[in-house]
Image (cartoon, rainbow, N blue to C red; front, side, top):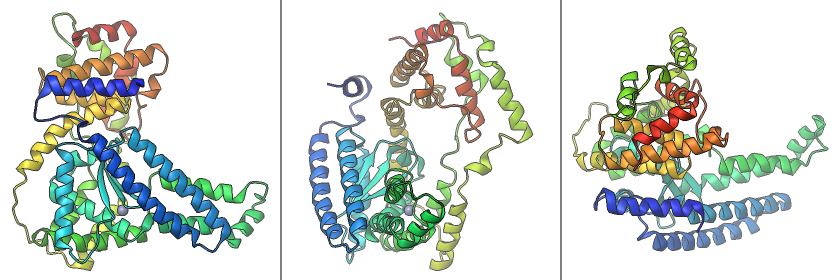
Length: 433
Ligand SMILES: [Zn+2]
């Protein structure tokens, strides 16, 4: 068993025995069944893709696309094996229920060739992988306000799939890369010595595995078709579609922060007396200074200008009535979100993002000091950070300060980076179990 897997098994055992019967992270019971089902599904889908590619006329495009889709398949199956995609006993049924509603209310559409699956990934994101797969990253579940917002995001992603955007984007990039126009351009730029189709291939690969950004035009198409699915499903709540988009604008902002008082409370007990100087590093002060000058005032950088346009487009196109506000019961979803916070910090640990996992753990811990999961995650993350630090590999598990981060997160990063080894050991001892 690899090290990663044994970590995971340790978690599962921990969560099973020490936390509660009701919330088990990364459920293994159904995971083999789930894995086989998704693998079989993907293999069938991929056969269909191969058949379509083999019909293409341009030889170079055909060969390039064969290779891209073969890599894409291998990548997906490997991720599935590594548990990037999984079945979660509580979250997955919520996703399934939302999708079942969409199917029932859009009886003229065939959604049988689409699977919506939960994914481990730190971005607050959902994406269409193409070939029938829509993935929803765990942090998105926690960051939408309610199941209606999630429903709209799902509608948007399945619209990308119904419009076959992944395939058509890859195809058009490949055609562009192999077009005579592109080849002429390359000659002009005296780039003939490079392998032209190789250059294009890299661009396509970035698209397939990278941010998966579609063109604005394709986003608009997915918003429109997605809106129709959503309106059919939730006719009373059409306003929720634009609210889901507007909320996306703020999701990556820190909703909570750590103050100097929090550091004191988290890192002080009978064994350890917290020293003010631990957080009074030069860098720590610098951030305050720079924030005041506005250089690090980053909120404007974090907003997504496209979102305003998308909201405006939907409102205008579908004449969304903003006065139509209906109440609905979101209690169940709120409770799911609150339990899933623990899944997120364990997920980050699993992804070896010890810094992020520790930061999120500290934020939860300040209001829940005796929680055994949080205390354990404090120790596990601090321990791993100290291991990486002594091997001079801290950058692999701890982000660097950046103007894209919140002030509180930058201060945390600076605090961890500046801790001396002796201090770190002292702090770790507080949470030893
Ligand atoms: Zn999209």
